[in-house]
Image (tube, rainbow, N blue to C red; front, side, top):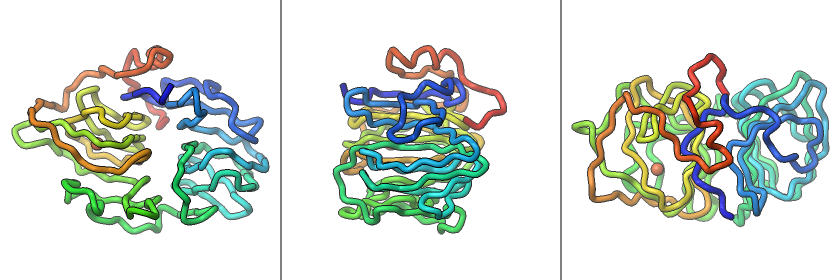
Length: 271
Ligand SMILES: [Fe+2]
């Protein structure tokens, strides 16, 4: 079955060791944030131990964002807040001297990628204005673009910084729908929506055509977004819905993840 809606869970509530084995990576620990049990596509947090090395030829297109520690890919460093994408089937030497925690996306992406191995030091990437060519993208938000669709120029994977003390006019807004998947992981701060306050370590996978919002944020946010499996278009609904900073945690989770959604995580861990 297609990957179900996970909206949202805290990665801190998902135990290490909950992931199926990753292709060619024995000895790593991982936690699964979402998965398609038919195709094997998934989003996981992977923990590479110290002195790790492996040669990987994954059947998936893989993207990663380094949450802590550092690794090398074919000898090139990918440090904390580094991003990399690797084409399907590419033989790549993974290594880590001191260990690393990595947010990893495994996709059967049918699009040809611009490079077989692409690495960004995200710290040095510029902050950019609104996404082009998506109508209605909030003009006051800033993005660091990690991957662009080579055919459409649309941002497929990017960091988004949201201002604090944001809320819609009169604390209500129409809902929003996209004909593509939207996926998000919060690095810092929070975004509050109908399912509650998505703090750091908060993660959602929202399939295409699922109405969502409105959203607000008291603290501001730094989050990674992906728009995959379809064109990113904003389709606004007709009806207005209320929102507040005090929205309780009411996640929408598939049966096998409901054990992870009993309470919001409020401890010190980042994921
Ligand atoms: Fe959206």
